[in-house]
Amino acid sequence: MTVDVAAAALLIAVPIAFNLAFFELGRAFDYPNILRKEPDEILRRFAAGGSGLILRWQALLLSALAMLPLVAIVAVAINPPAALAVASVAVGSAAALVQALGLVRWPFAVPELARRYLAADGPDAAATRHTIEVVFATLHRLLGVGIGEHLGYLLTGVWTLLVAGSILATAVLPGWLGIIGIPIGIALLIGTFEFFGPNEEHGWALAGTIVPIAYIAWSIWLIALGVGFIL
Image (cartoon, rainbow, N blue to C red; front, top):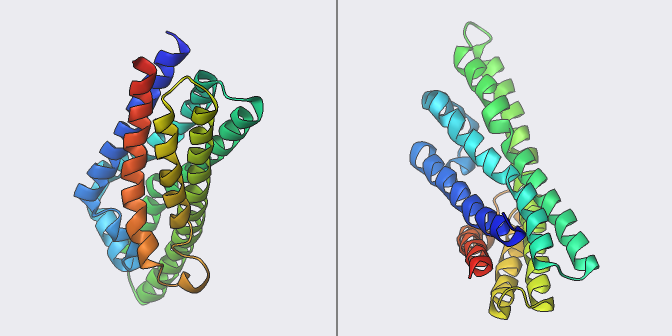
């Protein structure tokens, strides 16, 4: 298998796998809308989802980790100037890791929290549930909003811009693919500010609207890059 074919396979397979897992979570768990609900509703709905829901979260986690080989093979296949190649691999790898870190709580920490939440009984049940809600909300805010979303959008957006620049700096792929990547990368960077500064408590509605559109465009763009390596 050549480098171009390997790059094409990952560029096509990874966004498809990510979006399939995302779609399944939306169908089974009302994701991502569920993320903005209260901990009581999230934990109860999570517990009701059973092992099938945990496997869906595991699939999304693995699709995020699949970005690690993707960013490396894309840099080799495009073969831009050394500085761009190193920067794209470093930033892309960091993007994959922070997104995975943001997701890892769902198949591992949340099942235990949900079990303890539903099992709370006796005179201390209300206090126990309140403690679990605080723990969940803290993990949710730190790993989900802070690391998975804020840093994830930031690093993914920067990686997208670096790959777009790499395409424009070489003749391996059509230049228009690089040009299209620039507004997509900028849109992802805008999503970084959804829960930032004055928007910290409730979020910036515009950023919340832009992010899902940007990720759909980003997925299509990755697939287009993969097709470009084949043609």
